[in-house]
Length: 367
Image (cartoon, rainbow, N blue to C red; front, side, top):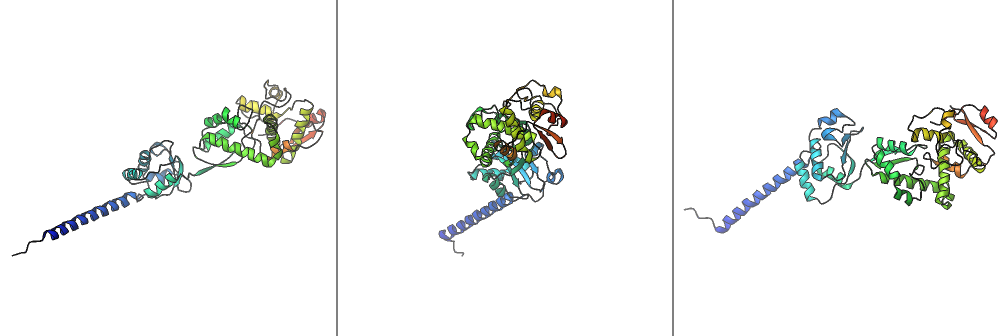
């Protein structure tokens, strides 16, 4: 007769069986997690066929750059659930359910911005990038001599911020007061340079970065500028913005600044073509003129320095290093006139008398 198993042996057997089930279950869960976390085996068809710039419909905010990397945008206020849904729809992850589980287990939040993701990437790798918040930076160049409106369009075209938001920030009274700028906008006080901003960057931060750069560069170019009060500095910046739009060759900028200072000294109108061009293009919204005619220089407007002596109400462009240096260190001459005489070389003729000036030729406007 078979000897019955002892209760202890039965308990041991049951315990072993339960442990085996737990281990198998754990192994299964681990296996499932590894499978779900792994990148999709096949590249999504839209990546192969859509190419650079695909970002429409369900793939809005998801593009491929020219190096083959995925550009993924996490929108301001977007939930982790919605991000996982978009990743799954685009074929960048296998399942959003594992993504949602990761989001519940990990307390770190996704940060809004645009990120560069490699393909294939696991869910944990993607999440680490979005949590760390190291956004891709877009390179944008603001040329010397552009206006506030033109800079706004450049920034919008490059995906930094909307033109409307930029103009609103540049006209914010509190921001203007913080920099002691006595104008209605920051025209002239944003430094023309190459910047690196994240995509969809807050416009106020863009303006602050450009304004901080302006004042930093100004201290380097003209340390004496810090001694000027806001009105005195504003007058110099206005003149620099005019010189910026007038000169074509750098060595003539100090001569032009000298001419304008000479005119101001005898209360003679500046007669700057650049101020008239500003009225036509920036205020009236008309195309840029190739040359100016009498009907142009007779426009009744505060910015028309042909008919109103002294400086215009505010700057007309973003002055760069050459123009800023010129107005702080003008050439000392007796010249009262200059006129473009060699359009190809950008050279001007400088003279003391009106007769010599008239003989020099037609009026041209810097493009």
